[in-house]
Amino acid sequence: MFTRRELTLVAFCLIVFILFYNIETSTDFVRTSVWSISAASLVGLNCLRPDGRRLQKYVDALEREIAGTWNFDEPRKQDLGPHGSTAREGKLFWGYTILDNVYVANATIFLHTDERESFPPLEAMLSSALDSELPPRVHDIQFLPTSDAKPRLGTWAARMNGVSFLAYDPLSSRDNNTLLAIYRTYSTLTLHGTHLPPPDRLILAHTRAADYPSSGIDSRLLRAVFPSMDLQFFEEWDDYHGTNKPFFLERVVLADRGAAHRSAHTFDFAALSSSLPNKNKGITALTLEEADTRLTFTPPFALPTSSQWFAPIRQSLIEYLGITDTPSPSSPSSPSRALTYVSTQARAGGAHLRSADHHALVGALEQLGKTHGWTVHFVELGWREGEPATEWSHHLTAAATSSLMIGVHGDALTNSIFLRPRPSSYAPKPLVMEFFPQNLFSNELEFVTRSLGIDYIGWWENQKFTRQALPPVQMSRAESVEVAIDVDAVVKAVDEYMRRH
Image (tube, rainbow, N blue to C red):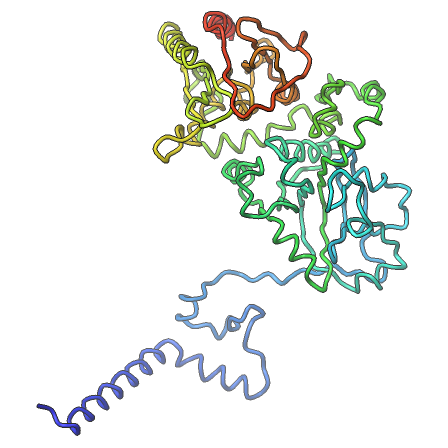
């Protein structure tokens, strides 16, 4: 049995050992720098960098191991005095605007300019933050003359360099075409010889982070095509407003579907079409028909831009997926012919093929592939046993390597925008076939594919309609719709197209 004296001596020895062991181990790393830092502090020298790390000459091995050796960039400020940077309007097309030198402070977007007459009406750019059907309030956006800039904003603003995509739409009005329309607006700058750097941030001003999965923007696709872009939500937008200092955004591509919807019925699209430049010079612009103007993401597609405006996005995806999209010198053979059928049978709701038609179509497409040596991709949307029925990467790879995609209407065919372009002007264009319930039709996918040079065929069972003879737009609000098709007629059309391709 140990006495109290013996236990005390053991505890004391352990404490002394631990204390001196740690002191010796620590001074092995810092014995050279700790004294130099102390001496520098005595004479009033600052030994720390702005991020809290020591100056380079005082850094030791322990700090390098813990804090790293990355560089620290000083926060950049935008000087507002005596005149600051005035706003410039680059492009506008009803709800889709490119603006340079924009200030954001206290929940308000400021356009700092003394030439407000050179800008479009504010209601053509933005909607009320409270109700997207109403014009903007003074609290949402306003012009700021030079005489009021310093009293309202102060003498400096935190600078946000690069390009900001600002989607001002509420969550309820956003869909799969939001990002496509914003980038199409941004691409119009190529006509002025402007190099388009990738966007630095996408701000979903009225979408909370928790609601993002239902925003219509695929985060995986976003990271694949714009890997360096920062994604910000309502929470970050609200933080900008809660600070006491303004923020300066170098370039903003602003999208507001409420403004687009309010203006679509008053704009003369026919006059715009007649004034477009020659499309044979690598320039593309769509003539918007009446049915197109009902889609609030369509206005920017009427502006002229390079015919290759979508190529950088598709190329980024191809590189991300590691696909050999074109013949290379070491492998001169052309990519094999491929088609994709996108099935929605595994989904709990929404449009889907009649079960018998689905199985018959799968069997017929498999037989076509075996007979002609074509690659047939089967992509299934939905979930099976808690896992995606088809992996996302396989879905995108199938789309990017195919020249034909078929499936029921809705978001099933969203990735048809990545279909493989035709190798030459003599080859058939890529093609999308969309199946509708009898007497129902939506021109949303038809418009998107038209803007990208992709052919389109819609189906009502055994009746097909091309772009030259589309039925009137009429859609159902039903949660789940069963779609019937004539499998023999569809397979015949697929066979005819693939033989020509």
